[in-house]
Structure formats: C-alpha cells, structure tokens
Length: 148
Image 1 (cartoon, rainbow, N blue to C red):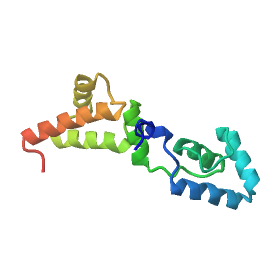
Image 2: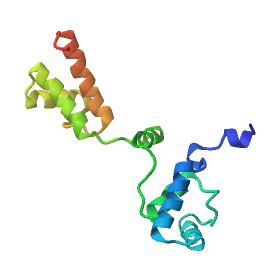
Image 3: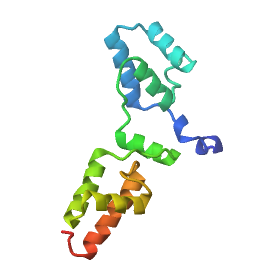
C-alpha cells in the first residue's frame, strides 16, 4: 500500500456502493438525464465525475436530490465523537438517569444536587455528563444492593 493511501483522512474516503445506488436511483425517480445529474453533482462538488465522489460529497448530492442519508446513525455518532463534537443527551438517556434515581428513592431535588456535584449543572446536557450521573447512580445502587 502506498504511503499516500495509508495517510488518507477518513472523511476523504470514496463513496460506498449504497451511496452510488442512492444517487442514481434518486436521479431516475426525478427523471434527470445523465447530463442533468452531472450538472447537479458539479454544483454540489465542483466536479462532474460521479465515480470520484468522496463519502461526504456523495452525501451532499443525495441530500440535494431529496434523499435521506444512507449513513447509519451509529456511524455518524462515532464520527462526531472522534471529531470532538459533544453529543446532546437523549430523552431516553435522561429517563434512565431518572429511573435509577427513583430505584434509589431520590427526589427530584436530590437528583438535581447529585447532578450538580457530578457534572456542574442539572439536567445534564451531554451524553458524557449524563453518563457521569448514571454511572454514579449505578455504583450507589450496586453498593447498596438495589441493583438487579
């Protein structure tokens, strides 16, 4: 493997077969000719070549053609995490935190105090902050025999 390929950043990797199929399928559904499709690709990426699209460029073309992202949510979240983008805490994650607190018999005020001690604010805003509170509650519940 050449050194240039080995050091190529992940976001510049080539499009997937699924992305290629999505592009041509969406173009067909919209009744676009080959030249019209290449014009759309050129407007989005600056190049008429569909075969040379990167994953990111392919996503832009798919979005432009009215399609949904073909990248799985888990992959998107992993890429964001690696890039250092904080993830906002989901409702289900916050519900888990509240459920663990109720197992322990904590009131809303006591959960708020624990959250402030663990991450500095209530409610936790990111998954990292929520994980701190959840893991603290799990440890306390496990220690006191409240964990199943």
